[in-house]
Length: 553
Image (cartoon, rainbow, N blue to C red; front, side, top):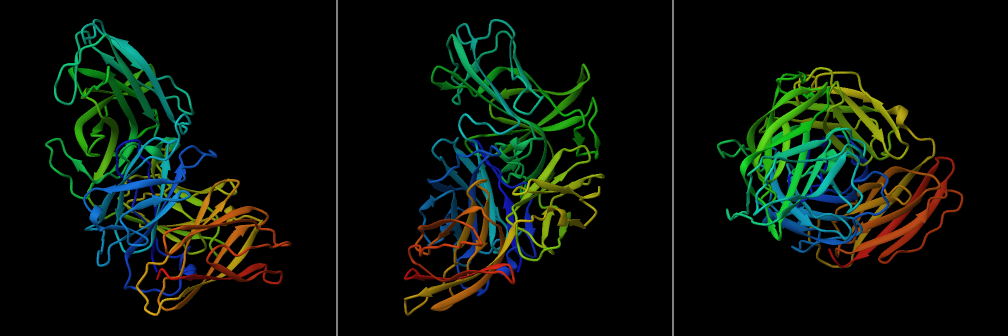
């Protein structure tokens, strides 16, 4: 059975989502799900919310989502409700029965929400099949920016709403980036609001934020790198969206009093320093002075991206600088791109010396000079796992990097062209950990109702308490009054884990314990009975038999 796993990109206030459409064709979930019933809610989807700052302890936990966008009416919670509550950092969703998303006709909707202590979220979700899938959504903690984001806040003087002299505002390199952005307002420039009304005041409060695409800031690009709501320079819709390959992104917010600035009377000269080894994804070569990079703006209210022409690259004292002009405020992104659904497809086959799913991995595709192209989250993997990336660029010398975030190990593939290779094997055996223990979990759902209603089942989320990294497993679907399935996976010995599941009534059931094979302890969480929980020293396996009794079936 195929499974889909997505790396979601958190958006600050506008947005779209995934970098690549990524499909995991074999494992890690193939051994975890027994009892398939096609007469259920469609496309079971888990969305996990995480702090975008690596190593951060504060996580987005409990908040309410609203669903908007083209296919909002086709989205339901795991209990077929239209109320969407994130609990303990995750939420389970489904599409309505009978909805069949495909690559050619994807289901697209937008999630909106604000978690306490985090910046607001607005992000497109794209579902292209009925397969189980998962999205990881990164959220920016207020006052704790991810690496690669720098910002400047400054009050700029005005006279009767106009700049009386050329005025420059510029970010300062730092926070793991040596890049910056500069904007210069000509003397006499005035501003208007969204209604075209001239704004009059003695100062304009200005905040500019720069996102470096070669850092973890790429995970929280406003608008994402695979937006679906996109138009060209003439305002014509680009069907099925685009895949961006970014050279840098900025957001600009300006207010005069309580009024938000939307337009300028004169174009504002803007400069973004880019990587000196920046790949020109149009030519497949290294960027040089004189190259052009497509320029895009995003309407933060609608989430629509529009092509706005091109930025020109200059050599300024040995550094590459992209220069362009803006005459309205929005998000601005320097992106080479591919449009529509691309025929290019890359299967990444993982070769490993273990067969049970384990670890917490990400797979990232880079250009030969280290430019970020796309990434996928893999909750856990094993020998034979296959990830599929689509809309890959025609680029020689690219490579795959696989990271095991639990062991802090990584491995790289040999260089290749992701557009023409078709399939590449990556040996990840060196990423194995020595302190893993096998888990064999028999999970049984007992329904006390006489008549069984089709149900999409649920998820088990296993969180390493120390690192806050989550592994996700799918429970058996209800196909009868007694439905069971066997899950096999690996966890680390001696670590404290929090095990949570979305009950079939929509509530979160949580249990926390140290995985000590020499002293296994348990209690019966509400609704559950643990019939067996022992360590088999011969097979080096923790064997568990858990029963969940419910009327919500």
